[in-house]
Image (tube, rainbow over all chains, first blue to last red; front, side, top):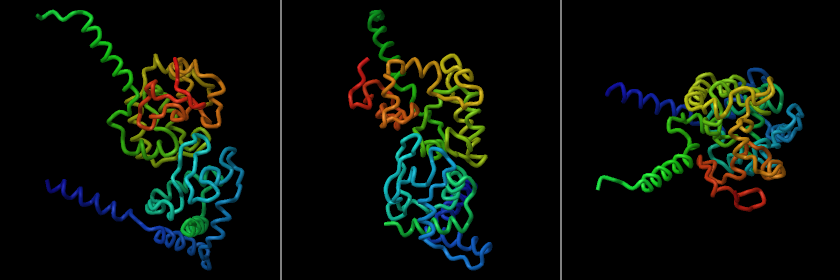
Length: 135
Length: 165
């Protein structure tokens, strides 16, 4: 019984620890980027440019916008399967950018597929700053 | 009194078999939450019965190169999903493992003998219709695919027509 209660408590704490706000994620990426580039400041305009850039690495997914649309406040469509994708921008979807592990998972997958490599902390910070401004 | 007419038993058996058939592709109850969260975020949660166990193992071994996308997962999540898929995989007789695709290509559940037989009446133009995009887009015609239901009466073809056998 005690063990069960403890387990539930531990699970609850873990869940709470994982919940985050977009601003907290941005602060985390910024801090990481500053360690590499001391003068770094997140820039939403750079993030917007990154979002719209055609990397051309993946044939079917040349750019983020291939699936997430030009305006990430809109619902997207997976370009291979046609499956609906909920909007990326927190203004349109309040569950976005609220869980670091999830955000990292998608950066991991999509950077490798679309950009052709892992994204840097600076790129992630710019990207998050951009998404937070999209209305 | 004890004798039930044969036709009653016949009907009962038929009803059971039809119900079982319609439910056959329902998502098994032991599906880990990660299956929906990870697989169904990009495509329909494909019924595990549609590929043989060894084919699922091959699919899960190369998630970073997953049919034109990167679907990489951490080891624990990957393992849980693979165990579920393998446990609920289709019978080799039906979905013929290996053999259905070129050697270096990944197994495709749309290339198994079962899938091909079930869909052989679908006109070629429907597969390439803008609304369909890929044969793996079950929900393009199977309107309840997201709920794991593939009944014939739920089918709506790309031109909006009901499926008539």
